[in-house]
Image 1 (spheres, rainbow, N blue to C red):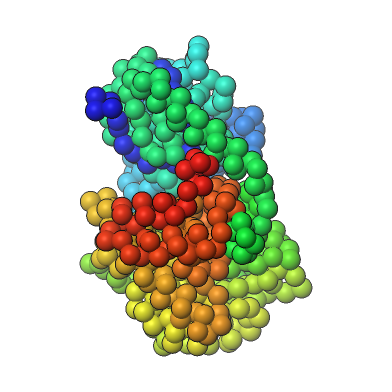
Image 2 (image 1 turned 90 degrees about the vertical axis):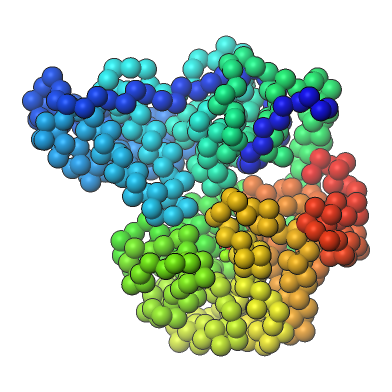
Length: 562
Ligand code: PEP
Ligand code: MG
C-alpha cells in the first residue's frame, strides 16, 4: 500500500483503534506581563486560590478514577501545593506582577529544575505543565485545557496528554490515542497501559492531523496510519483479537514452555506502589527492584528506618516468593543531588552504579542493613544484586559489603558491561546468580548512549553481538552452577524472550504489563523451538535479520498476534 501516510512513534499500550481524530486543547494563552487589577496581596491571594482549586479538582478526579490514577493525581495535587512554588509566586506579585503571570513564571522555574535532573524527572514535566495551564486558565478566565466533549467514539490526538485527562477517559468513547511528545515512562503511558487503551507516544506529525481525519492507531507497533483502508483495519483488528484471546487463555499460569520447561516470570518494580500490579499480572516474584527510585527525588539519602519500611512493604507483598533487590544504581541519567561527585564529561562512563557505593560505602552499608532488617522473620526469599559490576574485584567488594551488613540473602551480580559477560565464568565463582541488564549491556557494547535518539538504531537487543554476550553469560553461570536471569527491556519482547530462554536464560523479569504476552509466547513453544530460534538469531548478520530468523522458528507468535 504505497500511498498510505504512516506516522511513527513509540507504541506504549498494545492494540489497535480506528476512528476520527479529536484534538485535545493543550494550550492556554501566555499571560501578559505587568501589574494586575488588585494590590500585590490580592494578586497573590488570587493565585493561591487558583492553585488550591486546581489541587482540589485533581484530588476529586483522582477519587473518581481510583486505583493507580488516584496515586498519580494526588502526587500532582501535591505539586500544586508546593510551598516553594507559592514563594516564587509571592516574590513576583510583591514586585508588582499580575497573578497569572507570576504563576506562569514560577512554574517555569520548577520546570527548568526538573529538566536538568535527568530522564525520570523530565517525564514529570508534563504533569507540571498541566497544573500550570489549569492554574493560568482559571486566573485568565479562559477554557481549561483538556478533552472536549466527545459525541462519537474517537481517536484523541494531543501534544501530550495530562494524567488528569487520561485518568478519566471514557473507554467507550476513546478508541486510542496518539501524542506528539512523551515517552514510555511518562505517566500518560503508564495510565494508558493500565486502562488497556491502545496508545502511541512521541509521534511527530500527529498534531498536524486535522480534526475529523480518520486514522488507525497501532499501539503494538507504534504506528499511526492516516485514512487507512478498511481491509487493513480489519486485518489488524483481527490480529489484536487473537492477541487478547491468547493472553486470556494462558491466564496467570507460571511461566513455562509448552513442553514443561519452567521459566519463572518476574516483575520489575520501583517501590511498594508497583506490587499490586505485579501480583495482578501473575508475577512469580520480583526480578528487579530498582531501589534507587526511592533515592532520586530527594536532597538527602533516605534513613535506614525509612528504607527499612519501604523494603518491608515490598517483601511482605511477595510472601513465599523471591524478591531481587538491586542496590542503589544512581549516576548518569539518574543523578543524586546529595552525592559528592561533580560534573562528568561522559557520565554514562563515570562514577555510576556500584562505583558510587565503592566511593561512598556508608550509603551502601545503610541500604544493606535496612534490607537485612526488612527480611527478618519473613518467608520471602531475598536476593540482592549490584548494578554495573565490571570485574571480579568489584563482585568481591560487593559480596564483602553484604557480609559486613549481616545480610542473609543470595548475593548476585548484574551483567551490564561487556567485560562482565566475557568473563562470566570467573565472575560466577564469586556471585550466586547473574542478572543481565540488557539495556545497559546494549549501550556499552555498541558505545551508544541510551538517552540519545540519534543512535537508537544500535540500542537494539536483537543485535547478534548482544545475543553472543547473553550466551557467554549463561555459559559462565552454568559452569559455576548458578542461574542467569534477564531484567532489561529485552525480556519484555515475547519473541526475544523465547530466544533468551533458548540461550539458556533461567528467569525473565519485566514491567508487569508485559508479563501476559511473554507468558503466552513461551507457552506456545517448546524449549527446542526456543533453542532453534536462538541459533538462527545468533547466526544472523544484524538485528533485523536476527529477529526475522527467530520469528520464523516461532510460528505461533504470528498466529497469536504477538
Ligand atoms: C538494564 O540496564 O537493563 C537494567 C535493567 O537496568 P536500568 O534499565 O535500570 O539501568
Ligand atoms: Mg542498567
